[in-house]
Length: 114
Image (cartoon, rainbow, N blue to C red; front, side):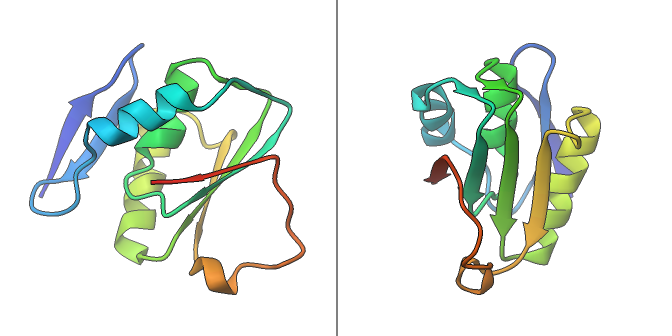
């Protein structure tokens, strides 16, 4: 079962009732990350996608492309759902993969994980 949580500036996030839920650490990390302009950004282990979505809500993502790597299919599907309800599919890409199997030829300006 899923529940929906209001974030800020009209953004929302679905979470599973009986599984991982984001906490204050995700909110603090999103607040700590500096404003990004025209950058390639990587989030490793996206969970619900809340940190990347908060970067949009905090208006820290300016013309940047965020890629989220999430190993669990169930969670990557939930991230996709969260991108859909927040209309941010064009800014955030989700890849269901173990980071160890992600191409070594990729480069990013900012990398974060929680």
